[in-house]
Every structure is written in structure tokens, then in C-alpha cells.
Image 1 (cartoon, rainbow, N blue to C red):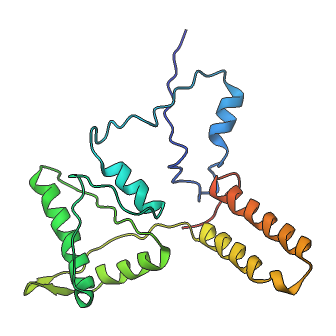
Image 2: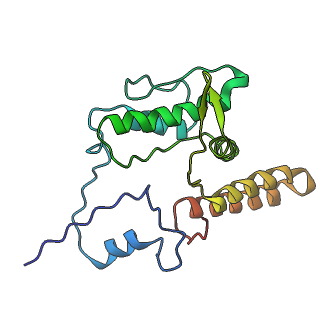
Image 3: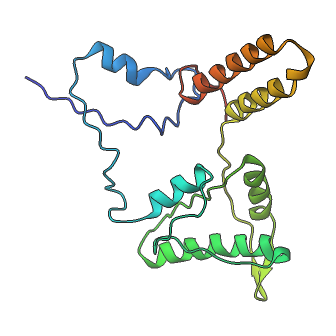
Length: 194
């Protein structure tokens, strides 16, 4: 007899953009093997007893006010100092992680919108000065699902077209594009986004 343990987080399907990865792979596994499932969604072994996950969830869901937690340092800034403050905060985070013994730290900068992510990427790609200290360019990757963003835009465009046709047809069209958005969001269709 053999025991097989499969760990998967359906919210973190980071390889769905690859042609050789089936976005339905978790459902296929469920159908093919009589598995006993355990939901560990409430357990946090990477950062136990930390509020960072609740904070990140609130940012991604655009919830306000953001939960207070000692695991997240919020920094105030002057409007004209936003780029330098963001840049300095990322450098400070890398430094704090290295001081804690993390040799090759990774830092994720979360945003409430793709447009802000683009702005943050530009900020990290340019040198700045913070408190008279020069800040070097930070090599980084930008990750968002372009197809999901495009699907959301199609939903908005469909709503904007409502005045151009009969109400029932317009609503039906919008509901169809909303369904398409959720198929993509829930990885029921393969995505080619980078």
C-alpha cells in the first residue's frame, strides 16, 4: 500500500500561463483518484500567528480600513515623495530580511490596481534619493494576469454599451462576459498571460 500526499492551493496556480499545464489539473486529480481532502486554508505554516496574510487579502480585495498588524509596517509619505518613499521602503525591507538571516530574500509589493503596479515598476526602475541617500535601481519582475485584466475591461465595456440596444439583450450580453471573466479568474480556461 502506498500513501500519496498532494498539497495544492487553488488560489496560487502560478503556472497556468504555460501551454503544458492544464488549469483544471486539481479537478482532474479529484476525478481520477478517490482522495480524502483536507482544507488547510485557515492554517498558516509559513508565517504562523502573523497578520500579514489578512493584510494582504484586504489589499487585494480593496477593503478599507486595512487590518492593524505588527507584521506590516505602513509608511506615510508626502505626495511629491511617493516614488522615493516606495523605493526606500523596498530597500529597507530587503535589508531587514538580510539582517534576520535570509540570504536571498524575495519581496512582494502588492497593489490595489494594475495601473499602480505599472507605476511601482517604473519607480523601482529609476534611481531616487531619500533623506539625501541615493537609491539604486532594483531589479524586479512584474506579475499580473493581463488576460484577466482584459476580461474585466470587456465587462465594463459591455455595461457602457447598454444604451445602444434593448435592455434584455444588453443585460444578457453583459452576463455572458461576466461569466467569461469568472471562467478565466477561476482558471477554468487556460491563460497565456505573462
